[in-house]
Image (cartoon, rainbow, N blue to C red; front, side, top):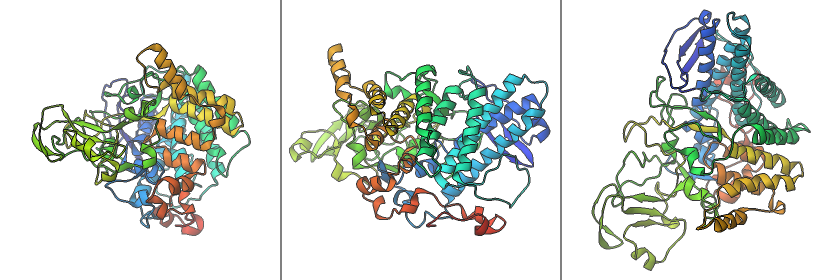
Length: 554
């Protein structure tokens, strides 16, 4: 569904919409609730329900709440609040408040569609149930984001059109029941495939439900069957879902964004943005700004200037030494397909480099950021700038290039247009492996790990060499433990807005931050496994903190 626009509900249903395949635009605004009670209105309401994905995936807020403060990334050149767990990570945070409000806005939109659907006439019942299933999936998605970040939540399954100050925090177990019920309905009523790119299908819903069970299994609401259920669903998606691992890992992040055989759900962006453009300080809007957050400061070095292809360097997310050294670079191509460390000259001229005059031509190597130290002799032998680990910063280090976006309108344009992957089959293999491992089935789990690792083995000069590399990438069942699974998730999914919740889910956040993040370890506390409830939510709730208590530590 290309592309999804914006909705808000406040008395009347406010919709900017119009998306289908590669779209016939039909933009509406200030549409009454009467319109929602028509087949066309329901279709537009469902499309609008998707738009809240853009409030999290691809935004600065989503990135700061999932990438920062982990074993993978530390602060580069940005506010240190979420990266270092400072005192500004408090109930007044605009980042957490923005996500809280946006997710509840999405839930309210979904509720309005779900409530309207039964009264609509003149619409095929199977199609109607399918649209409701999409919307219930999305409601589950928004609750899932919230419960992982904030814990116990206010549950609302009816639309709110007027101001209300009544709210309570329901137990985490009750939130997960809503999520599981919604996804169960979605699986029963969604189609297995779609010709309308971006719409949710059964495999995406099964993948999400597997992840929900896996997440619940690591928390206080865990059920005895959670790991078994997660494994069963993940294996079913792998075996019957119709998706497959791409042969080339880098194709997952190719531009222009397009459907591929591995991605089950992506948050879609477009060069034709009808909603308000997002920016790095705004959790909503219609722009994927992840490209700026990861982009490192290449400009200003000899032979380099800012350009569209290399990106606009905000340099927020600096990979930790752990992240950079995690790959077997001789065998695992995910290193160079995930991280960029070489920039080619885009500003020809004569420069002084390493104490000597060097003339750089267009597309000559101009800047290389190494993952190791080198001798003075090695450095002097090069005719380009070299940065080694002891020289990282300010703003320069190997750059996660998954989100590099060269199709923006201009060099300094802040509207990113690249789709953001949410659920893909590579993670399904990791979910299956983890769930099986936690069920004491390491011998079965290792096959899913090895399939994923073989995909990224470096090709050899001959088929025999290629096969030898694939075999060298394999591990044994005895090698598997939860730390290995987390390492493999880092190699496969680095930067994809999952790491903080992965570490919380597995009970490893404090341990691995202490081990691998030299800055965040200084202030992180046990209570940081949850975010602060926005103070505005507590203040506007009847009964205040007595009825809507703050999370411990805040």
